[in-house]
Image 1 (cartoon, helix red, strand yellow):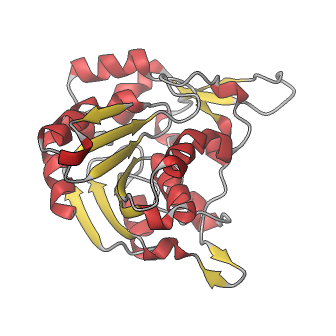
Image 2 (cartoon, one colour):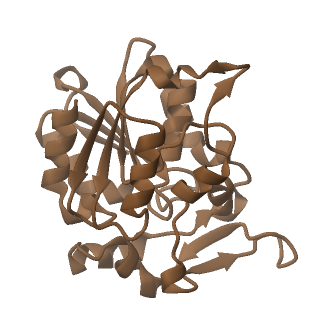
Length: 264
């Protein structure tokens, strides 16, 4: 989904990547604000999202899940550089694109996101990057597209937990909109292999891309201590903090815009 004015007048090209259960729709406030500031904006629907034609139960790999973003990046002209912005699990997709399209990316911005170099997964990566909802109980509905004798093919956050976990500082109107548009996410996302990225003993060129991390201090999904651990283990160029819930694109979009533009 494209939002923005004429390309020739755009200051920067922002590519916004949603997290689990969400879609391009969740960026509507930030996309409008960026557009109003003269920037070009592209909002990506990853496979299985509300704007995607793909059934999340049919997604069998992380490459398939990320295919819309990777195809978008591949189609960009070689001289064109974008700023990737990822929220929550969308940070994994951003890092995946950074690994494959380093020369087309000016900067990566991680908003309450998994910031883990794409590659193999360690125990610490799992601890840092996977939400711990044990305090809330059983929060997911599981879908078994291959039959109940097989692992689940998609997962959905139950409606009664959505506002409490994702949007507790957001307006009722925004959380109600989200409850209509949230979709199950492919189960492959919960088992994606991510972690320190080394190719044949050589550190990935993904580290050449400038990264900015925007922490959410009141986050009930990706806890502040998890965010801090990822920042310590793979330090970005800049760290910024918002006093918000997990979804600042709803709860504080104007402040989120300020921090993003300040980071560029």
